[in-house]
Image (cartoon, rainbow, N blue to C red; front, side, top):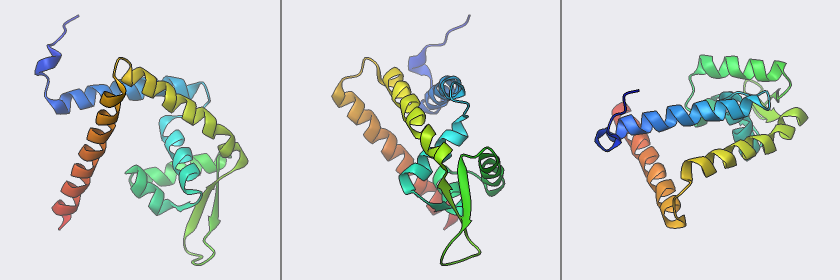
Length: 151
């Protein structure tokens, strides 16, 4: 097996490698609970927000309209979420967790906790806090880039 010098891999390559490997590892963990990563993300967001429109959820998860529609339909069929008309605007559908969806939240949190322990093993508390801050900053930089690109 050929191994490259990780010190010479560009940051974008490192981010891609870590993201890909962590998503694959999390995928295996979510399968234990009969969930996939996308479904787990929807469950977590709805748990955090209580209720969201499909458009709001798509924006939060950075998912296209067709992708979120397909995901929501599947999750509604399998009983994880409930779709109801908004009380103020009947044209808008609000998404909430069903009892089945609520019962999965702890499993989603458990997987997130396991992944965090794996990813941050060997890092001091200060390094962990710095890593989080840097990831947030990188995400904000991407948000700013996207906003400026549209302007």
